[in-house]
Image (cartoon, rainbow, N blue to C red; front, side, top):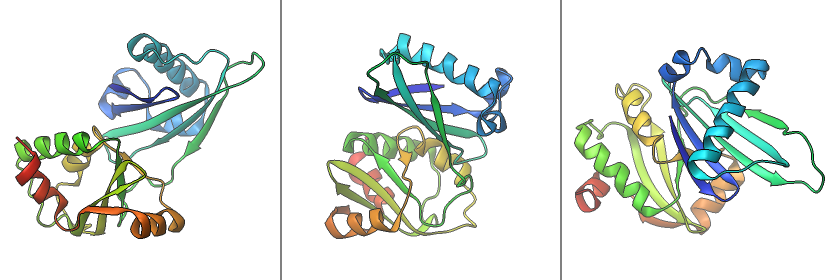
Length: 204
């Protein structure tokens, strides 16, 4: 399990499903928003407070989770201050996009994160030439977005590739408005073959 503090008010948790099985918890429990999921989230919050100083006392919480692969579960927790003391509330937004999207967009907080991903990808020796028709990297609002065009749904290394990717980036909840802004106002950093170019020039 990896807990990362994205901002003062948001953290990201990446969990492999085998870890959830070890703790007698599964994705179905989370999606059903039952007692087990509440207990699981409280345990995560306690751990996040100890490891990254993410305190949630007297805060309202927004929890967003999805399973991008068969063996990786990713979710973010955002806290909002409230004026009066209240019990912690969990508002779960469950993504129905549990399968691989044809044109997914992934968000990197920094360019360094993209470079680190390219280093891991280089060492893995995963073939990347047939992953999609085109993979581009954009800069928009000081954030980097990796865009897959016409993902090859017959690609045999989805599981491993997106497992690595989920360690460094989060999938974007796509909308036509966001895509239009990204393509119109975003700055293309790598127009073609973002993986190949990243590995060649930015991976050690």
